[in-house]
Structures are given as structure tokens and as C-alpha cells.
Image (cartoon, rainbow, N blue to C red; front, side):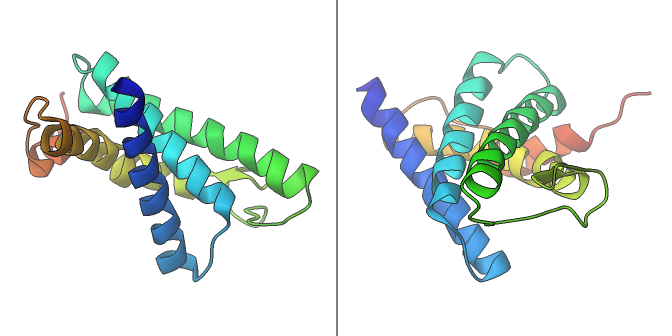
Length: 147
């Protein structure tokens, strides 16, 4: 049952990532569905394992994992296979044109908290697991500053 749950989460995450790419850029590559599925699945599993951590710390860990997945995929798909699916070489603070600061910030502030909430929400709706906090509560905790 756990494998089936994870497969469902992978498919939903991969489909969502692929759709976001299409809406944002007008096109995508199947490798992005794989990266999206893995990002969503791993992000959700990390959320389960690190749920006692603050949303900020969870979002940071998830963002690092996503950036690692995108970097590795980019090195394989873009550099090794020469498919040139994306190139961030002209963007500020990029690493070999495969990841960049702009998208790292988007992952941290927008998509990592969304993964934390959506994974919990889907597991609640689909598999009758614990009820998650509201999406607003997740973002409030992310943006909370302690002095």
C-alpha cells in the first residue's frame, strides 16, 4: 500500500510540475515530469520525517533537494545528452547554467511550502491520514520572523 501511495503522489507531483512548466514557458520535457514527481515525493517524505522542524527549515531542506535534482537532471539532459531543455547561464548566480538563485528563491518561498501543505492535504483526502493545517498557516509560519 505504501508503494501505491508514493506512486500516486509521484504522478500527481510530476503532472503538476509538467503543467506548471507548460503554463510558464509554453513547453516542457518529460524529464521535468520525472523531476517534479521526485521533488514532490521526496519533499512530502521529508515533511513527514521533519514535521517537528519549522516550515522554514523544512522548506530549506526541500529546496536544496529540488535544486540537487534539477542540477543532476540538467547535467544529464542538457550537458551530457545535449538536449538543451533549459539554460540559466545568463541568469544571476547560476551554477553551470542548470540552477540559479532566482528559481531557488521561488522554490523556497512558493513551491516548497506548497509541497509541505499539498502532500499532507492529498494524503488526508486520498488516504485518510492526519488533517493538515491550512495553506495560509503554512505560509504564515514561513514568513514569521523571530527577533
